[in-house]
Length: 282
Image (cartoon, rainbow, N blue to C red; front, side, top):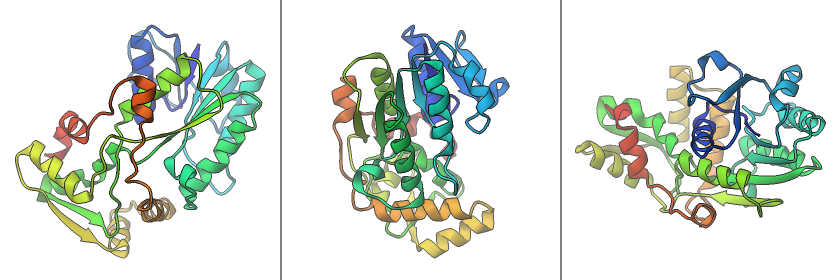
């Protein structure tokens, strides 16, 4: 039995769907099972990293766990620590943690630092482990959807990196292989898409799908911060994301071949993701 935590998230939902389609026994853990929209036949259980008492039932009979903590606070990787303790008691044999590419490139922003500390907990768990380190998700373009729909304009932040963006389904495909085949213990994989795209090229791809030109306008970090503050979306997490973006310019363009090596299939393109989500752009 495989337990997928974060089962209703961008990667977790794709992973549950893939495992179920392959006939792999899978259990989906979420804080709100009543809201989960997952394939028929998938066992959905209530579980919360911040409520240790919910984990034994979720982990009962489980051999492998896909680990997706919901976030990191000032207290560090408490959620991984809680899960590892419960996993050992339940007899789990293998943990597969979703991390971030910045860990492998020495990034020091708060988001990457949280994942680095979480990785350490998993590595020191005494269980077999595998780390998946994706770069920028293609779903990052959700952040531009409103202004593209209303103004046919992408407002990007000055210095936004050229990015080998990855489709969440590719991350899920790699996770499925790692969870169901041998040879991945003690490995950390950087995962990217197959092409490095500038913000301008990302805008062109959206425009090509829409059949309309998309204007790309660059803002300073301060202007981006002010706009998100105005919308009520600012705060420490946005500052952390902007710092991650600033640092990631040094590596986000680098292309890894891990997706194709592990799955046997080339990574999905940004055009594929845009076509699948064209409705958000108006």
